[in-house]
Every structure is written in structure tokens, then in C-alpha cells.
Image 1 (cartoon, rainbow, N blue to C red):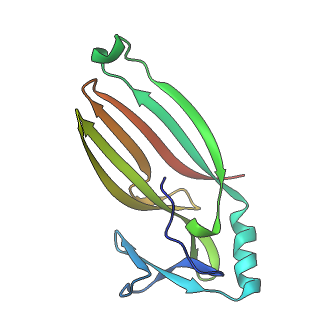
Image 2: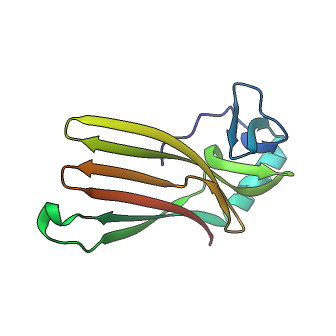
Amino acid sequence: MQDYPKLLPHQLWTMAETANGAEELKIEGVCLKAMTYEPDVYEAILVQAKAYRIVADTFIERGSVVDGRQEDDGETTYRDVTGECIVVRDDQFAGIFTLCIHKEKIKYVEHETQCAGILYTDGTQIGINYDEYHRNPGHWYLTTVYTLEKR
């Protein structure tokens, strides 16, 4: 996951009816707007977010061209939820905003696409919530899938 757009102090991404400004995003019909909260409300939302953590499951899928192996190697890491990625609905922690990268490298040319998504506290998700790096020649994929889990 890439760094999130920087917000001002006491600002969080909040679900809004429409997006029509510079500090607003739209992901599959859901509008996120950077809104400022009172310090006590802001701290209460951060406390709610601390009950969750971001799980990153990384695995590599190799083509037989690389080294003859086709099994996957994997690793799971955990990260704390920070204010930069918190999504709020009705002054409550609703999930996190993900900013994922898809890269494809074919010989000497590299293409990069930035993809956004939302992981909700109820386990549902919208948008793209995984990083992917594809390398050719060799035909292998390095993928990191993000989920949100309660501690």
C-alpha cells in the first residue's frame, strides 16, 4: 500500500453524499471527503480504530520459466490503523481507505497504476485492495492482499 494523501490535523476521510472538491475521492460510488473533527470526536474515532489492524498477506506465484518451481511462498504481516487511512461514517470508525499499486515490468519498461479501495469493519470491501507486481520475462507475480481484522 502506498502512502495516503496527507490530511490536516484532526481531519479524517468521511463518507459524503457527493464529491466535488480537491480533497475528495470517489471509489465505486462511495464519496470520501477530508473533514475536520473536534479534538474529542477525533480521539474517540482513533480509539475505535485501535480495535482493528491491517493484515497484509504477501505471496509470490512463480512461473516454471523462473526456476522450475511453481509453489507459492507467503508471508503475513500486521500494521496498525493510522489516522491517514481511517474512513468515518456518522462519526464512527467504518473502515480504512487503501491506496494500492499495480506494477508490470516487461523487460525494460515498467507500467504503474494506482488503485483505491475501502475495507469495511464488517469484512466487506469495495475497489482494489491488493498490491501486485508482475515481472516478465520470468512470469512471476508478487501480490499483497490487504484485509481489516478486529484485534
